[in-house]
Amino acid sequence: MQYAVPTPLDYFATLVAQDQGLNLLEAAVSLAQDEHPRLDVQAVLAGVDGLARRLRERTAMDASPAHKLSVLTRFFHGDLGFAGNLNNYYAADNSFIHRVLETRRGLPISLAVLMLELAEHIGLRASGVAFPGHFLVKCRVGLGDAVIDPFTGESLSLARLDERLALYRQGSGLPDDLELPLEFFLRAATPRQILARMLRNLKEMHRAEQDWPRLLAVQQRLVVLLPDDPTERRDRGLVLDALGAGAAAADDLAAYLAECGDAPDAPALRARLSMLLDRGRPPLQ
Image 1 (cartoon, rainbow, N blue to C red):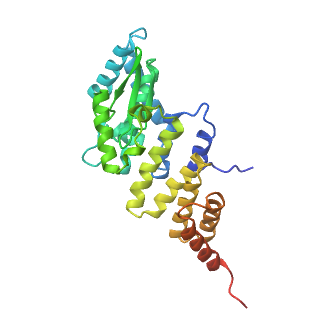
Image 2 (cartoon, rainbow, N blue to C red; image 1 turned 120 degrees about the vertical axis):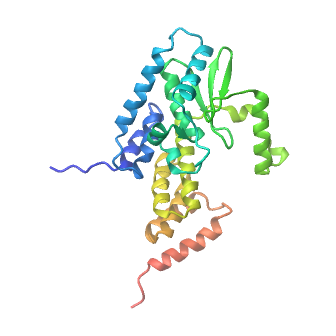
Image 3 (cartoon, helix red, strand yellow; image 1 turned 60 degrees about the vertical axis):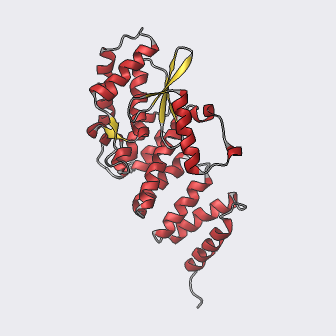
């Protein structure tokens, strides 16, 4: 009896099937398998475990959270030399954990995933923060939280965070009446939300380059990760259309319109769907 070999997408679907027990690091490492099909995810995880052992050797488990955080940032950014990739920020490798481990350079969110894993190994309560424009890490220290920029290891004060948020609001053109308090932007992100942000970073990179095959691979993962988000299925349909897969594109656009028939983009998508359906009909005999 022959068994079908699971595809990278099958593996990813298994990893993210349920929120409970979702292993952020393993799922994040697996994102690279479309680009690097021979990647040994378990070997990468073992490498991170090796770093965690080194960190534990220099961290007393009964140390205060503040001391643990100091040891973590010194180890991560100092001893290991992890930092943001300023020279080639938009390279896809910055989103791939195994490449970040090799080069010691990455995006804020990929660096954060590694920091979160190491923090857990020393009993430090840490979580990712989906701050606008720049992913952060916060750690419980005493009665409050310390917010760390994983790009640099800098501890950010509330005043500095307010400055960053103000710059984001200016750049995005948000009207004043839509302003939300700083605390709203410092909420802990779930593993699923972190993975979605990582994939959307890759999505924007590939879309900017109009690299439709790579974009489709990312979009397939987003549909699996966020099955209740119709916009991701819409976007997959548009990529499929660009690749000439009209029937599959029509299925995705029809599913989106069934859920979001009143959306602003619905009229244009109905016209596009009609063209796809007409293209797929056999000619009159």
